[in-house]
Amino acid sequence: MSQLRISFLLPLLAFSILALIGAVALYSTLSGSRDPTQLPSVLVDKPAPPTNLSKLVQNNSPVQSSVTLASFRGKPLLVNFFASWCSPCRAEAPALEMLSKRISILGIAYKDRNDDTLQFLKQFGNPFQAIGVDQDGRTGIEWGVYGVPETYLVSADGVVILRHAGPLTRSIIDNTIIPALETLGS
Amino acid sequence: MINGSSLARLLFRHLHFTHTTLFTIVISILIACITAPTAIAITSEEMLSDPVLEQRARDLSKQLRCLVCQNQSIDDSDADLARDLRIEVRSQITKGETDGIILEKLRQKYGDYVLLNPPLDQGTLFLWVAPFGFIGVGIIIVMLARKQRANPRKANLNAADQTLIKKMVANRNHDNENKQT
Image (cartoon, rainbow over all chains, first blue to last red; front, side, top):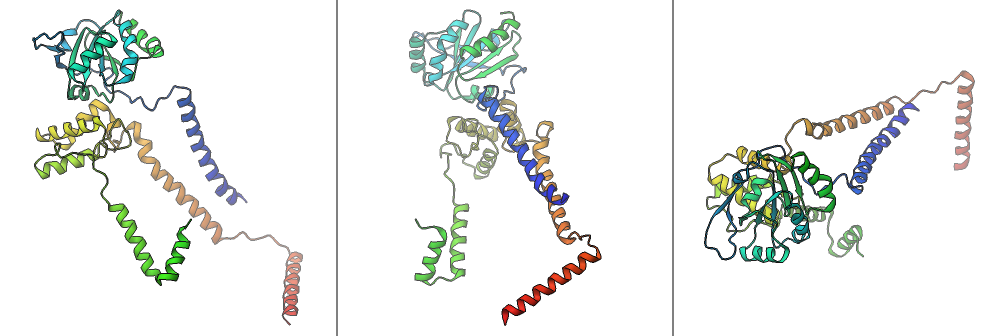
């Protein structure tokens, strides 16, 4: 009898374990603690990649200057990858506007046409201290961007504190961004 | 609806197909399905002119995950980011970087996740060891089952039981003989 019981119980046990793993994953996805669309960022706690971009030309000014990450050293900085063709970027525009009162924001126009970016800023406001143009997405690759919008919080000494992929929602700002800003003393 | 077996019967009846012919046809179709070239995402302006370097780029692209569509390699994916990463891989190759360094550079930006072949470390140890564990469990189950079949349990019967069984068997044989006649 004991032999039969093992050959019956073993598959049952194996199935129960698999079902349990599935149930835990499903539960944490539904309850919001696990988000399969959020990829882990390797950049957190590491120095932000050196970034040097040409500045978005505004008001038809002929001056071709560049914007570097290094020039923001000394105080915390929010880096926001956005594009006029990205609808979640429109949705998070008010959130950025609000955050811009607490911290400087460097905008990076990701794979966008200059005219479209300017139109976007005119329509949804310009919360950015400066805007760099990343036409070919190379800078995005350096930062590990896999879709816009993406937001990075960089400390005064140039270390990435946190990264959020996707639009900045009310709960992300309240539960993640603001506490992180407070620890940075901003 | 024609299902597989009724189709086979149809072929047998009307076309006088033998089993071997049918088998050959089925196998050829299967091979065609497996070896058929999949849709190619790469465009001609991305390609390198040197076929050797281009082949290296293709091989590397197959090892890199597209982070947008997540279960496709950047070689398969039509996503914008996949295209950017293909261009990045090619520019690194033309700079003369080795395959290992190119993969490592991308891993530093996107993490282990970008590699379709996860490296063996503490976090992925279970992933690599588990299949061997499952095979081991399978072997144990098979061995137990075979042992059980090889030594059927012997019943503990006393003399009275033995004679009873013999009597029953004899009666049954007798009945069968009567039935036949």
